[in-house]
Amino acid sequence: MHKMVESFLILGVLLGCYVSSAQMAEEFRTLVINDQSGKVALFKVGNKTYVDVKRLAQIARGSISFEGNRIVLDLSCSTDITTAKKSDAEQRPDTQLSREFIKAAIEEISLMREWASALADVIQNGYPVTESWIASYQARAQTGLQATSAAISTDADRNAFQLLNSEHGTVQEWSSKLLEERKSMRAANYALSPGSLQNDPVSKKIVSCAHFLGQMLASSSFQDDPSCH
Image 1 (tube, one colour):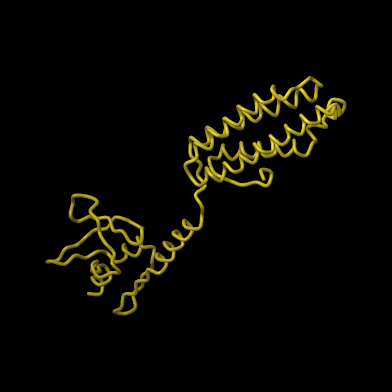
Image 2 (cartoon, rainbow, N blue to C red):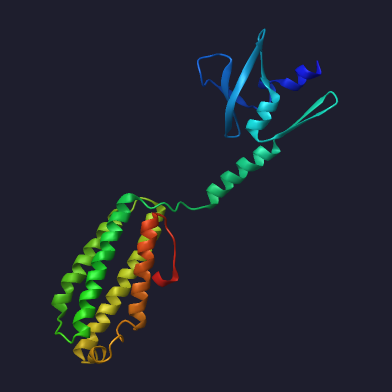
């Protein structure tokens, strides 16, 4: 009698757990308890259905003990695990970037790089530069930024776009600064001092942020970094 009590437990009276059909064979079912599932064998005696209590405890990730004529079944561990999973999911923001956003953002970074590189080249070599010439690069980068904005479909995309938009603003700031210095002839200092343009704080910020954005997009997951603020 003890062995029979140890092996079987009436399923219908246990904490609202339920059984869903997994196969056509009546003796096997999938038991689902607190989002945990596993195969169990059912035993029908008359109009009652029984299931192996040890197997039930395993599926539920609980514990079972036998104390004399008592069966002690503890499912609190299973409940704690499920609650922790739900809590983590609620607290952890969605960081997955959408494919379309990644594609548009990579294109925008490329356009900003062309803009910054072209400007740095003419400044360092002392070539003449006009606002209309640099405006063409600026316009393409602006169009790319708008396309990236249109590709936003998740919260992660939206957060990443803020960093990308900040980088665009920094490049714009740097471009305007160099054009003004070119007009006042102060830009000649960059041509006379090799490496001075690369060591410019704003230039360093642009390069650092662009490098971070490239890594973030490659990972397909939103991250944050001070260089893009």
